[in-house]
Amino acid sequence: MNSFKRHIYKNNKVNKKVTLLTLDPTSATLSSSLPNDVVVQVSSNSSWSVGQIPDWFSIIGGSGSGDGLFVIDTQNNNSSITRSHLLSVTAGEIGETVTRTFLITQQAFVPTLTLDPTSKDLLGVNPGNFVVDVISNTSWSVITTPPSWFSIIGGSGSGDGGFSIASIGDNPDGPRSFELVVSTQGLVPISKSVTINQAVAPEEVEESTLSLVETDRGEDQSDDGLDRTEYINYEVEITPSISSNASLSVTFDMFLDIYSNAYQSSSLFASIKVIKNGNTIFNPSITQSDMSSDEFNTLIEDAVFNINSSDTLAIELVTQAGIAGQNANDLASALARITIKSAEFIGSQRQIINLPISEFSRTDSLLVDVG
Image 1 (cartoon, rainbow, N blue to C red):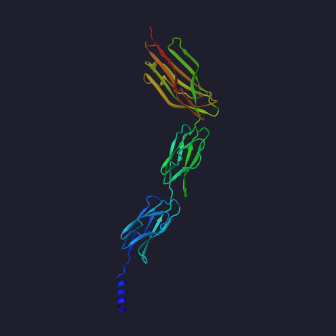
Image 2 (spheres, rainbow, N blue to C red; image 1 turned 60 degrees about the vertical axis):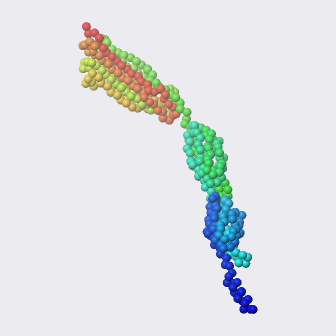
Image 3 (cartoon, one colour; image 1 turned 45 degrees about the vertical axis):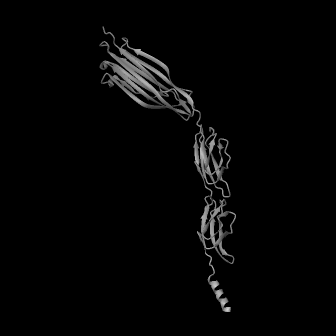
């Protein structure tokens, strides 16, 4: 009898079921935000269940029998701390269980924020509006109060977006700058800034005129009228007058021309004289002796003189044409022409608006009848 009981006991011990349980994978590291699910494969020859579940994730399919799976569905981690949990899976019967663990780690939330542009240079007059693009993975807002010279439209948002800098006025007072700060929300905020620079508005440009005012004119001729001379004097006048701290740079051309179909026996002369404060600063001239054909001329381009409030500037044009009186239709002609092309103020917001202007002297001598 005793031997029979021992035999049964030994057979029961040999035939006892061994519980098997494996997990694949056995750990996972997830980002702080979606997507943040992980699938765990379970291999077992028994019933099993998942336990020790914290409040920051849930389990889908947390129990089964034999081979199967469960899903770990985590919430977003909005904190600055990485969190971990050792999850337990238990299989088998009471008193004969096997437990395996699964380590799940979720990274801390790292906010991102990018602004474009990070600086903007604006004109002093009519600067217009512009948009600042925001790239972020969280909520953000402009946290600085803008100054009186501009306003903000759409100063907060979530994720990618942007805001407008609007109602920017003219700037008459001098260069100005403002740093606008944008910050993310949450436990770990980060901040970025955009710097707005505005130049000073230029002074209002005053319109001015430059005139060649005739101050004297005269002519002389020989008794027979075949040798004639003309002169014309001008004074350069700026309206309004040049201020004491400014000056004017004037660019001009001078053209001289003499002609005669009997040049070898003609008397010809043309000159231009520019006089500043009583001193001659330009005096080109041509005469009959320069001629080797019926006509001779010269052009002086882009000459420059400068004047200020205390300067006086005069221009004298002289032409002379004479013929010997030998043949009918003998002709002599002389021309002197000055053209003021442009003028630029230095040290003053003024502009000459009536250029170019031109003045000339021309003298002709013609023998009509020699009978």
